Length: 474
Image (tube, rainbow, N blue to C red; front, side, top):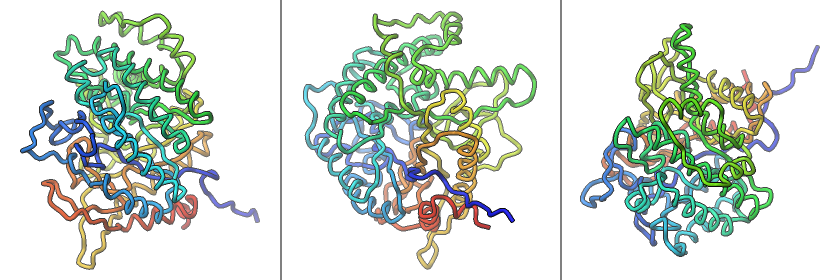
């Protein structure tokens, strides 16, 4: 009889969770922090309203969020109890440079992240840090029109250099920009880019994207020089795009739409503009302004790995309007898939598909830095929170991730979004909950902010403890 080998994930696989500063920290104007673009949205960065004059008489969910800024020690203790090996979060740019273009950094902001990273490392939890996660300092939009301006390259690289030098002994895994391909779908939130009309949208976005590519290359160069052995990643939203039918028009239109996302990883991971970009620029009369040396920088300083978010897939029909949100491109209903209460298709096999698609394309390590299930939660009379749908989503996606690794994909780790309930970026809600840890806060801001473990907390704990073996027990 052949002995059956137990299935498990690779040794030293980084199990963890992920949040963003602007959705969790709160303390939006404390200790010298300046206003960020995320502080000016009410109701989420997709369907909400934005006004660069923040009205302090109105309620903004992100201004307090879950008060991670003051409660991070108790939260990290819970993450450690869960067994997490890594924790992805972001540095709030405007905590370090309140206006983005300040001459000197804010020491109180720098000290906060010193304390945060020390607390993680105390428990053996590896920080995975995004330099800019939808929280551009508001002044850089008011004064420079966001990433439309080449001047932001200098501000960003100065900021990156400061945090690299400050945290060089604490952080090994970095990412340049969160979901950088959202410059196309939600340009205001992703890049501080106000697009006046459709005619000027593409030229503006491609020019701003070039500025971000140069900034990313320069930051990667600095990271490798200042922190030998550190890794700098690109980070994209990567929901797969399926053609609605086998009609060649649907197939090729879906293919072109996919390339619009992968344009960003093509440049940052390969180091040059893909040939298909030239036709897009020609047909839309786009003249991307580059300075001497830009293209050489892109070639010489490519990212070390691809971090990505995966929540769902989308189905595309030729000629349909292209809309997006924080989960990726929105498309037609797929009759073969169930949905979350917020209407996002649940597609575990698509997760394996994306891993293979990306590893085949780039042959660089992958890091799953967002994957999760947003839903309602109910506290029962005995105080427990049963969330079997979240557990089911987790199990099915991790099994497919294991299969992708068996397919030959190199995957550094997996961080669930988010291990603790936070404010939804897309909708600005608290009731759209992702966490294994419940936070007592409501959409109107009421609540005690007390933390409570859900059933999924204990299940993820078992998954990590067994390095995934428990997923395959009958």
